[in-house]
Structure formats: structure tokens, C-alpha cells
Image (cartoon, rainbow, N blue to C red; front, side, top):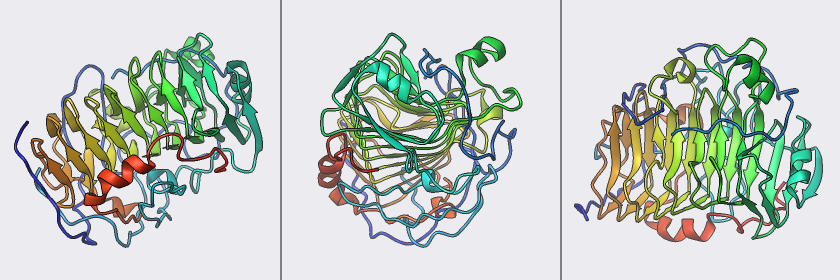
Length: 415
């Protein structure tokens, strides 16, 4: 394909220069903002776990959806408060191994009234085998571990709303969500009828976002909309060890003011619109200072684009394995701020694509083979302002990640 670039260097314990804007135009409907602080305050932020929205299942709105290298990643993180008023993070975990069950990254940051993401831990544990049982288990905000056994086929709505304090985890290797996806959102049908189809920066006072959600060890097939959608100021969400086949729209989209998310150890197989962070170039009022997402140890397996595509977000992209991409790995959109380290990218069109953004730190710990190199200005944000991490050597990623990513590596008892 294109020029062969191989970038390997010793891992250094440095910090890339902190920056904010990464302006970018983007395709239909995407938006983003960078930097801590700024922007309208998120409605309902600062409280504890969400309490009380109604209606579990509904067809929520879909999400439309190099060179320069500063010092390497990892090392001793300094404590820094987030733009949304978060306290300093406490995570100091490493990248982990193939079946690593630990949470690291932005979902472990203390912010918006939560110390970290625990899902349904401490609540009742239920096992569901039907769509009706799943809807019932998601019907309130009480802490609950929902073990999904076998294949659950959609009940008509393209998205099933997930409420606060839930762990959704597949049992064994064959737990499957077929024909629908999960909408991690507090925007109910009632709110849609009274306040508009979806949340905006002017969302009604008193709106309570969904928070504290874990989704693990599931295979998503035939999704009628997004496989997982995280909109409307939802925060503290961990999406881990899942397998995503091509969906009607995105596989994992984070947008509309959501925050503090980790996407780890997932297998994306032949996905097209893989992951969107920030949905529209004109949505800065809602997204600025939010959209902090860590993407690590994911396997982007012969997909197309958006691994991720970023608008107004802070994206830390490390130790991912991308192979056979039909288009680009990372899309730089309006207001983005991105730090990429320890990734292994082979046989793609390009490491990056420009959609009006520029602020990307692409460290020399990335490996790029038979792919157009990254276009980077070295001014992406510094993740060590939020948490510490120790990346695996990039040359180990083609073995490490396929061995450990996706559904079936966990058992369903990790709660």
C-alpha cells in the first residue's frame, strides 16, 4: 500500500505537552471540544449515582455519525483536576495482560461525584436469558449485576436503555446481543416528548445523567442502530472484553456531553463506523471540557474508519492493534486533543485523517507498517495529568491483543 514506516523506541517516562484545540471539520453530524474547563456546565453533574428515570426499553436516537512524537507515555502521573470539576485521578495500574480484569484510564478517574466505576458491584446478581428478563433487570437505578446467558434477540426497539449502577456481563463465551444495542442514557421517552428528541446544552434543570455502568464479555451482532451508545452527559462507563460485528451505525459512540469512559480489550471485526467521540462539529457548547475517553488494547480487525474519530474530546489511544483497515485509524476532528502511544498499525490506508483538527501527540513508541504515517503536531493533551499507565511494548501487541481481546476471555464471574 503506502510507505512503510516503523517507529519503535524505548518507552520513556515523559509527559507530552498539554494542549487543547484540534480543530476539524467532520462529516455529517459530529462535534467535540477539548481542554479542561470551559463550556456550559453539564446539567445534573456533580451528584452521585443517577436516581430515577423511567422506561427501560425504547428506540433512542442514533448517533450519526505523524510523525511528531513527544515523550513516551506512562510513568508517575501527576494529579490534576479535570475540566468538569473532577478531583485528581487515583488509578496507577498498568496496561495488564490478556485476561486483565482491572480498570484503568478515564473510567477510573474520580469526578462528577464518583470515585471510580463499579457498576452493579454490591447489588443483587441476576441471570437473564430473555429480552423481557433483561428489560426488567434494567428497570431501575439500583445496583445490580446482570449476567446474560445465551443469545438474547431484540424485542423491537433498536436500543435498550441502560440505567445507572449496572454491570452487564456475558456468561461464558457465547453470550450474544442480537438485533439491538444498549443506550447508556438518562434521556427517557417522557423527556423526548416534553423537551425534545435528545439532550442539548440547554437540557432541563434537574436532568439526571446515567452513571456507573460496566458492559463486558458480550458479542454484539445485527445491531439495528449503534451497538453501544453513550450520550446525554452519561459518565463513568467501562466497555471491556466485548466483540463487535458490523452494526447498522456505530459500534461504540460517546457523545453529547458524556465523560469518563474506558473502552478496553474489545474485538471490532469488520466494523465500518467503529467508534465516534463527539457527534457534530457544531456541538461545542455541550461537549467542550467533556468527552474524556481511554481506548486501550482493542483489536481493530479489518475495519474501515473511526478508531476513533474525535471531536471536542480528549482521547488516549494506547496499545491497540489495528490491521487491514480500509481507511484510517484515528480521525482528527474539530476541537480534538489526542495522545497515541504503543499502538501497532499494519496494512491500513493511513494512520490518521484530518477533519479540521490538529492536536495529536503520536509518540515514537507506535509501530506503523505499510501505512501512510500519522500527521501530528505533538500538542495533544497529557494523560498523566489524569492517571498513570504503563504501556506494553508495541512489538508485543500483535500477539498480546488478539490473545486477550473480545468476548470469551472472561467467564462472567468477574464481578
